[in-house]
Image 1 (cartoon, rainbow, N blue to C red):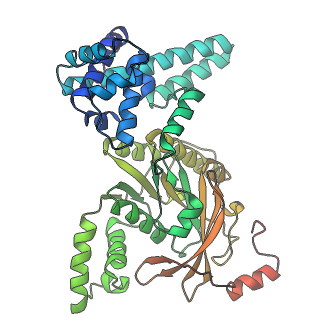
Image 2: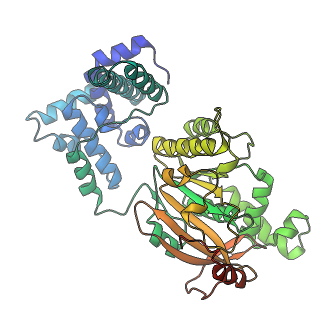
Image 3: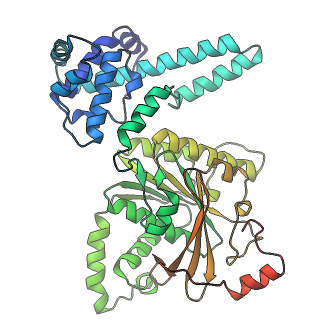
Length: 439
């Protein structure tokens, strides 16, 4: 919703009335909190009383409880002796939930303007000369892109942590591979996760597997492919879901015994909330635009990062890839969802070498910008045994698991017991000192 300058001024001057309207709506219609999740945060409220009520509503939602006027009054009983009267007045100031949704937008916009003004004051007080113009320009650009961060006190952070520690982790997605998830500790909102391998090791199929696992839980996934068309991706998903050879599907040579499996897979896959975009000119801005206009997206997969364009003129490809990864990281933080980006490895590594972080292709910034880095390589190519290592993990440990990849049906299966030894080619290369020094 675009607001005029007049509406913003009105919001700044009459914020208390709008805040009361929103709180009233929460007491009248508890499910209204779900419609505010992408708009408001407690820090947007000027009134500490209304902020406390909004925090209580969020806490009730996270605990699976129904928020009502009684809980709202309890939330501010220590702050005001007239807690019941305050709640009654808020409900009277809410003519309808529809109006309150508009008021919530005004509150958020006014909060952003206050943050912008505060940032500019800080720059004027602490910067000098040309530095002022540069810092103000950067701040205004962030404001236009909606990236102005909020300051949270340590007390607020610890309170949120205390409220959630006795509950299952939220805002976190799993890959569907138990041993790997035990290392990763989830793909969290704001994370950029790199999945890298040499060609034909199975990195695209691996990420399709993860996307399907997430979608199977009812969570919406945006899947961007710069290598394959949506039809090719569909054929791969059909193959793995129906257990039919990919060759049979691409050649349109399904046998009579295949059709029942295919029909069941069509029905199953059609119900998955996966949106596929095969735009060869993909940029981060296009992803941002689609993600913002597509409600309830919880995971983005980009296949793959090193084919993307930055949309800006860079001196060389290394700088361009670095800018793309940096902007993907910022987008993940902005949307508060994980983004998986597939990447290539340097040609100095074969598909049987266990990669280290130095193997990432085109930019050293890839390692820096990623929260987690996952490598795939061949341990036994003929048997389809893949090594899967977590080489970087900001919120957990690093480690390694093994999987079996059925390339005929595009399926990954995690092994419960590791197969000892590596391919003959890998062992020979190690003796010649060509094996990754970061092992």
